[in-house]
Image (cartoon, rainbow, N blue to C red; front, side, top):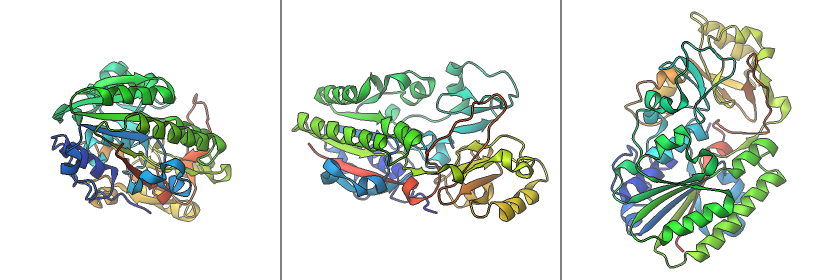
Length: 386
């Protein structure tokens, strides 16, 4: 297992450096030693680009035109997934503080199992009460401020047009100017316009295309590699365009990827005795599943995993995850314990586990993340001064 390095080597520490450089003390983690806040604060423009899913291992194998800017790697947070990492980029808080723990989350505040980024109920999952309108959910579920609200410079959030005005993105962009874009050319056109503006500013940009291709086709598929190459070409061209603009550009990712072949994908329906232990559907991620158990079922659950799934999974009790600080330093979000179930099923090697609820359309992915392999946990750090 490759655990997050919240003491000085994670994306949470990167955000601590950026936060302090912009006059904010919101992040509880120490800054990166290689990026001291005083050095960052000297630049008029600070630009952070997050390339969804771009793992360090992949980029180190084939850095191409990005090679001059690759400084090393950071760790993601736990779990290594967009739903936990993107809030860290936008708030400076580790998951222990923002309390967002994976794609599917059981949220007892509204008595529902939601996909947290679109804030939509999982089809077929139980509802304790009617779900409030999506626009009202952020105020019910989130307690954290954003970094932009405490920065001493103008901030911008540059997002794909299809998520720019979502309730999740609106909440996490508070204090910043939202800038939607269309396509890769649109991303760098927007970044170019913003860096040309007068004044000191912080710009956060997010690009999702590699992640989409890696999920569908595999993380080293021709489609996924073409997305990386397209980004690299556009990025280097943009650096030339803004040369001399007193800008520091940092590029990283929320997580990396591994491919999981069909024969390594465990269906919960094939393990009815395990399913019988569960009070709720599986939550979290397919590589790190939160398991909510029926009363008295813990011994049966543990024994089943040891006897039938020891080659593929490890059952870790919630208390161990919290005591060992897997989600980051405390004090913890008051709902954190309730949002990670009684046990985590942490998948080994290239295994995943999934369930399909009545009325839910089954789907198969090749690329996965959320687990603790180096490929999933290590993300690149690129630094460019045009």
